[in-house]
Length: 349
Ligand code: KG4
Ligand code: ZN
Image (cartoon, rainbow, N blue to C red; front, side, top):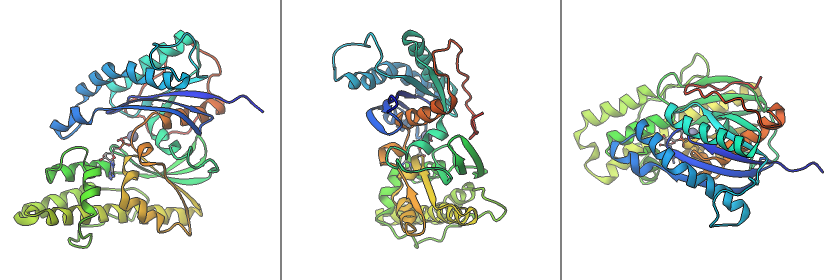
């Protein structure tokens, strides 16, 4: 039997400082996350400068706790030998200052412990996040990645071989959730709050538009967001009771879910793909998950646990493992990684 490979994943692209150790892309040893939600909440959105500062403050503790969990030790600082074979770190997309914190720490650890280092695309991380729960999943399959910054429909022909079918032309799905929550004074991040409130509302109360762009597989959520804004402006009583707020949330959410589900299923049918992966923070949405589950007879839907939908380092370790196997550097190299704040879904070279 070949030797198993343990990967230390590090993720600092946005507002979560995370580190995790995963063996062979499936066995999760540790999963440490320091959330910055409390820091950004007063601003109803992420403040990049505060995000990078908080990463700098938290990253050592987070990486230490992921690594210490491996040894079952809870007092010693970094061990003399690092009990992992590979280090993987997010190199984009994300906030430049935040990405640089993870990259610097990963390069420093790789250099000190002489480990191979793999740069991972954050969007691919969301794609690979389902693998610990779906060991048997093999390409080809369709993936819908829906996060705060991205909405991407991807034909995964092989691990590392992608055909991006469509993406958002304006707001990402999660961004629309966050902006609508802000309009309703519900705080940040908006997705989880809208999800909870929507459960108590009527999804048919208000007919918000369903932006199905007919020319291809792209998405657009900014018009839907604006129609919520106009609805609130034209109906001053729209938020006069908890029930009415819940109705706005449920009706908005129903529009987003219908577009995401219908487009994804249409693409799966067209390409004759039976497996669909759902990843990214919005994949935690209960209405989206149950709408997809409803089609579970025809398609096998792969989602991760709620904790692995939103940003984490398990997904970076898993993606890093597959990338390492496919041709990553097998030994330590002093060459530094390139970070790219606008990195898009790209096939491995
Ligand atoms: O993947 P993620 O953690 O970070 C990015 O890569 O952007 O996604 C964060 C996004 C936020 O917009 C948040 O509001 C949304 O995911 N989100 C949700 C839910 N949980 C998180 N959106 C809808 N329903 C949820 N339950
Ligand atoms: Zn993300």
